[in-house]
Structure formats: C-alpha cells, structure tokens
Image (cartoon, rainbow, N blue to C red):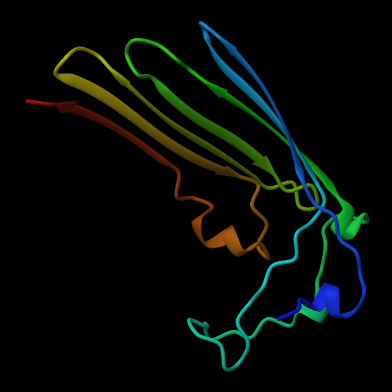
Length: 148
C-alpha cells in the first residue's frame, strides 16, 4: 500500500526536535515540530468511519507556510516529594482573538490527603467560532480526597 504523497512523488519530511533539562527543581522540555504529517482518514468503505467524509485534497492551513509551518512547545514538570503535577495552557486564536485558559494541578498534602484543582476560562470567543456555545461555561473544580 502506498500513501498519496508517495504515489504523487511528493516528498514530505517531518520531525520533532526535543531538548530537555533535568534539575532538582523540575524538568523543562522544549519541542520544535518541523513540519506537517499528513493524516490518514478512512474512506467511504473504511472501518470505523464517521458520518462526515474528509476530502484530503481540500486542506486548509492557518499558516501561509502550509505544511511546512514550524510549531514550538514548552513543558515544565515539577518533581517534588509531594508528587505535584501542573498542566497549564493558554491558547489564542490569532485570527479571531478568542482565547482559552486551562489549568490542572494536583499534589499530595500528606500520606492520606490529596488536593486537585481544575480551571477553564474562555474570553472573546466570536459568534462564528465552534466554541461559541461554551463561551460562558467557565469552570473551577477543587477536589479534596482522603485515601485510606
């Protein structure tokens, strides 16, 4: 079986560069994604297909670099005796200005108690955005748990 890219003699090179720094206060990882990997979707006769048919010849890219757009990411991981985890993201739609904040954190308070916090907030979501329906559904959840 050949891919569409191979069948049309196109060459696509993608990859990821990962640099990591480990210290006693935590780990920092930087990622550079160098290009686009074409995604394969099942056709009309494919297994596990959804109701919508994806036309891969009509791809729309947000960047003028199209499949050669480079993305960056940074991750910080706490490494402490309380097994603390923190996941935070702030996303901005460069076209509409809409934004989303997502934070998830948890830590062990003692041998028997843990606390978890989850928060999500939305701002400036335009009416034509798929997320418009949840623009007012901000969330804050705090969970205190006792383990036996």
